[in-house]
Length: 226
Image (cartoon, rainbow, N blue to C red):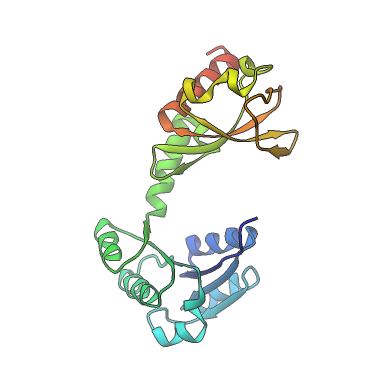
């Protein structure tokens, strides 16, 4: 199990609240701050620490121990000025990783200039993911890594693979993919080259979007005759 991290979330709108909720579910130590009292009160029972404060005031951030965070996420939405100031202050505190939400491309460029490690566009990215999942439903089971071209996800073994070993299936040659883990009846384990695939097995697979798509098309063809 990975070491528990301290994560500071600044801005508790819908995006910030959802982020706090999921991080808490994942067992992280979550600090949540917002200038609005109602938002702080709403998230208080879900996180380890919450406070109502103006995140553009460095002294207040110092008082709550913000600099002890491993990761800081500036989830402020419409107030672009506060977003930039807050991100700059947190970067100056020496926090290892600072992530910030951007509203526009110009906003993103400014955030990058103040030293933000990663800029995200939640609405834009969600729209793209939804569009992709409508056209290619299988993408909902995969996560994009290092940009949009590399995917990691879990898939049930194809009918034609049942009874074959990993070496015989040769994922790397056929689909230029790497099998990371096996899931057999809920039990996960690292597979060997001679592991025989059984009906109902699931594999955690990494590969390019293009090659994963080929695999999923093959799976659909075998299962549905399409």
